[in-house]
Image (tube, rainbow, N blue to C red; front, side, top):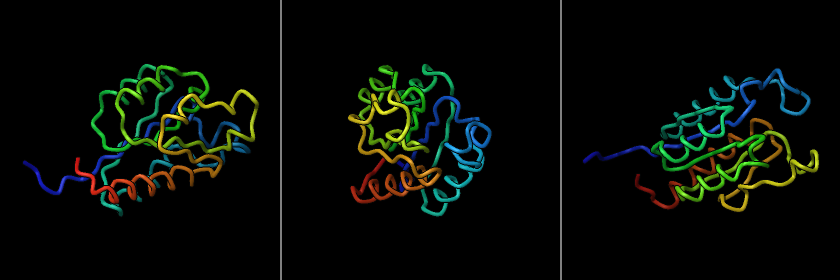
Length: 153
């Protein structure tokens, strides 16, 4: 049996986040998904956790990753699926893993249809509107949560 197993954190980026830095920089900022992922990886390395990042435009692929990948904590930006996906909500309920929902923009300062999240009430918390800091704060929170509970994978 292994000792000193590191906690595994999965970050899922939903649809169109591969367009960061190109799509509506006035809303989403000028940073790329690669830059965001590099910042997350650096922080995870410094904090001693294993990090896996995944981006998909496909709802089914996101559900598969939530339900089949081995992880201890999930950080997810469902992006457009935030407002439409019962399948992602059901996957989160099905795995019952601690999860933080993140958004780069403040969804409550946007169009009316973006103000409703189908996953917010089934996750531990929500960080929204702080640009890439939303993700970095979520990673800090995930690490604190795992350590405070003396979590053993």
